[in-house]
Image (cartoon, rainbow, N blue to C red; front, side, top):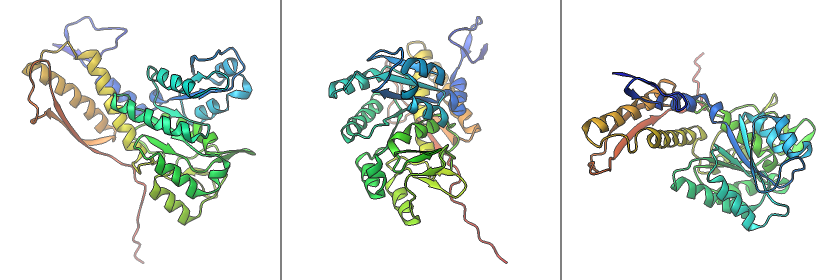
Length: 347
């Protein structure tokens, strides 16, 4: 029997079992192929019209669509590492209903990170609810938020915002960056962080990742940095040579690397199962064995690339298969990056 991977645009001719979980795993590891950042623009002056979604892959296209003066957030996302940006054009002077419509529309778009580059606590609360609701419905993405110049000046205010937006899928930047001679508040600089998260491979961490900033808008002391990290805040640090991300964490204190791996696994398994297995496999011993083998191969590919270790996929002993229902139990050990190295030097 033949087999291997398959491409939906070029299906194999020979009968066999073709599993594209491996391709999904490779895409997950690559990072760039997942580097899609989503955002909403209130100001634009190019060919774009209101209340539409635009997929942008270059700054030139963004300039044509939105005008040179309005593409700052998109440019920062690309500089951070985004491969594509999906921008929604809000109507002039948007109200709450317009923001609701924007979020509802994004439910049907594919992206990895959404960034709110305007500081608005009301919208932050709505976005948090949106993120949680999407996760419940099986759509997984990260949200990046920040503050304004006033809150950036007080790390405690940024940490309070972190607590208000406590969630595994939310990242809160609490100090901004200076690019050249231009200062950006944490909200304004958040698109760079969104691009960095989206463009980083899921077997890598953004901890100590360099940014394009020459300095930070607020330098935190060692004590303030420790307090911020304990709160779950994302901090930029000027170490004297470069401005870097102190530690890649979400507002819940979880590692961004681990969360993105979970998001990729949940998304890939759901998407590939819906395309290749639901309604196509018999719910008998052979069909269930095929499904288990496919998921195992996908996780083993991630394991080979240091995303995780010791994957195990079995039928769930607590829920026996019946009718059109099958339950799998999946376990693995998350692989982290070295972030704290301790030496004992004897002389």
